[in-house]
Amino acid sequence: VCACVCVYTARFELTLLPSCQRCLNFLNNLVTGIIFFTLIVNIIKAAFGTQRSCLLRWLFQRFIL
Image (cartoon, rainbow, N blue to C red):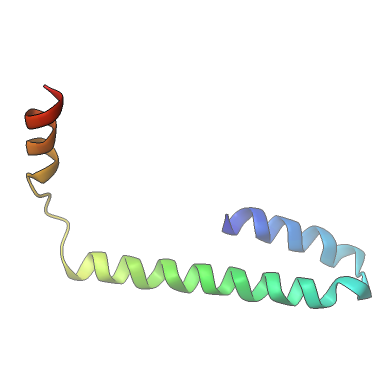
């Protein structure tokens, strides 16, 4: 999502449309927010470790197999 918004804003910033400046500012802020949110989620994941739990294996054995 972030990459698509970046490509979209870069395409319109090259044309320098003054009527779209407010929209482009919003999209730039949106991209910044998405990247910040992703950073926070990755920090939380790293803090709790990457050891896999057996819950997924248990669910597969119990309900699918």
